[in-house]
Length: 233
Image (cartoon, rainbow, N blue to C red):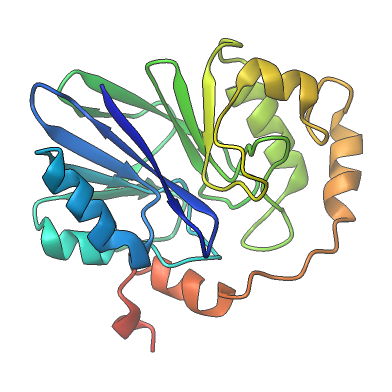
């Protein structure tokens, strides 16, 4: 598998590129609009054709690159959760569905709680968790259908049941960490680790008192239209 982790410094977002070296078909997970040209350049340099654009959820802190990248790769298909509310998506997935490019098979894991339409993507010893599980943290639960209890259940039942050696690649990191593992997060995650129960987690999440993301008013409507800004002005 060809694998690259790409970064957007403004939104602290990780975009992931996965590709089959034989078919040269590629997937991008959680693209960022401002980085669409960069991503296309990397794909071109590696001799890859973009087949799928996967979203872990409807983001509130940046606008997805789906629309711009589909302008460059017209046959690429966008993929979101059936529960995300993004009617523009080409493919809407549910828990245990599969997306495949070449020999790479990606399993969809429904992980709601940060938003109702959050999914994680699991393949080849890696899990791309969006905002459901971050490195030593998790996504907030105070807007976009957020529910702390559901997020706890999603992480503990869907993600923490994966093998401990599974590598965790989140949608964001704010302190410079690029990768973790399921085993690490079970032991060291201060919100969701082994020393926190469901009630403690809900209490933590209900008392974060965080300011809303600066771009939430433009990002959410645009992302419900797969990044087509002109349709939400």
